[in-house]
Image (tube, rainbow, N blue to C red; front, side):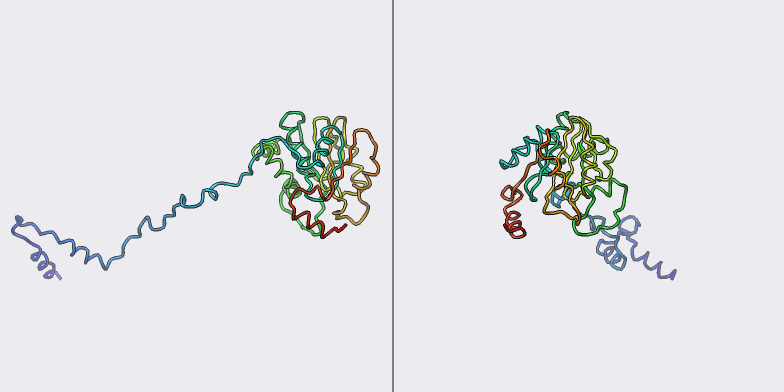
Length: 273
């Protein structure tokens, strides 16, 4: 072994360069490296995030509508005028007529202008024909699924940041109808009871007796979409409050559906005249 190493040194010795060993040629070095494993290329697994769509690089934020609420039909115009001029307004009629949107937009407008200090959103916790079972989280988390539609409306009218702030500080409150007992709706509160066709007469009585002086209360529902098997609180209340001062009952017709023409035609198939 020692003799072979000496032969190699002599082979690389070059007297022309002052006795120094001659440099090994580059091809020779490359040949020696062929049997050795190469280090991984540090740029091999790099992904260029800028190459992805810019629409996917940001979180979803609903577009905020800064224009004042404008009615799309004459029925909506009468409904909006009734809410503005009455303490208690009932909005009844088929889905897609804008009952919830108009009420939510007017509540957002009143909160933003400072005419009210708080919005209360409530509805009976009744599933539409199915049992959702146990929902995880605190009460607010459990009930959030029931008021998602109104949150979308408020996000559009106020902006999601303002809505999140108001929810954290109690300026916007969402609570089940059963939790309204013992409360008083004061003159700085805008209250919306949605899906009222799923209330019992006892629940509706409890809710109506919460109304304080100069409060703004809107009750919406579709009598044909009740998920209850017993007496209907919405129909019972409309019969009882007819003619009372400060109360207005507004009825939407199928021709007032503005959600889409398809919804109107579907309603014609499900509920033929």
